[in-house]
Length: 296
Image 1 (cartoon, rainbow, N blue to C red):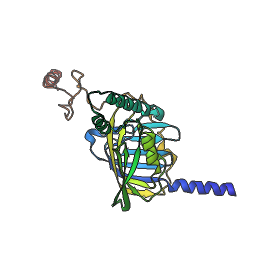
Image 2: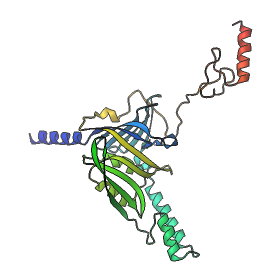
Image 3: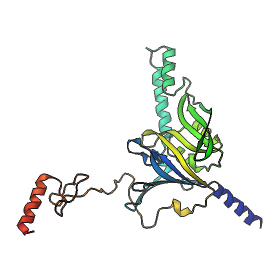
Image 4: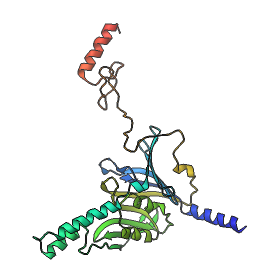
């Protein structure tokens, strides 16, 4: 009886930390920033150790982060394809630390600069003379309502450089929310500790991310609707059986039409010309002559 009660309590706790959120954002794990960094509508499924973010417009591309098995999936419904990487392969935390230490040493070796000028240059790059990393959480002292929930603003700094602005609601937060981003970024241990120490659920966030592919961008996301305490089936975080896997660096199949005359791609926006796809004026002429020769 005690075992059954324990299971029921655990299941209830897991559901309490599960959410479906509608939001706008300029990117997602694995896909990076959206084209031109514009904000696009997304739906987010969040459960302990799992997170999925999917476009609600366009091709419905989705990122699935499985902290429980250490995998990141990219799902492409239009093509019924998926890609997968180990999360451990996507972090560049050690590389970033090494690059920062190399830059610190170079600045300190600049004999032409005074110690004060060196300190200014170090600070501009988020570095300290002694090589330590100090993370700090600052409360903004301001409140906002987001998706009908009152929130409090906080910021996180690393050696004086702002890395995050978050608006926190008084809601339970599953580990997958921040875990999905810290798993594929290069946040220092000190910054990760500040993120984990936050009590509550961020309904709006701005994170400065460095990915394992040596790219960096600022991720922005704001919730417009929040459904908490929902029972999300495991299948939501799994790849459908009829999808095929492709390599991580393999491009998706081209949507471009091919010219029926020469085989080159037809420029985007072009329509069929007299029943054929043609890419240029000369190919149109060849098509007309072919039709005339066949008596059509």
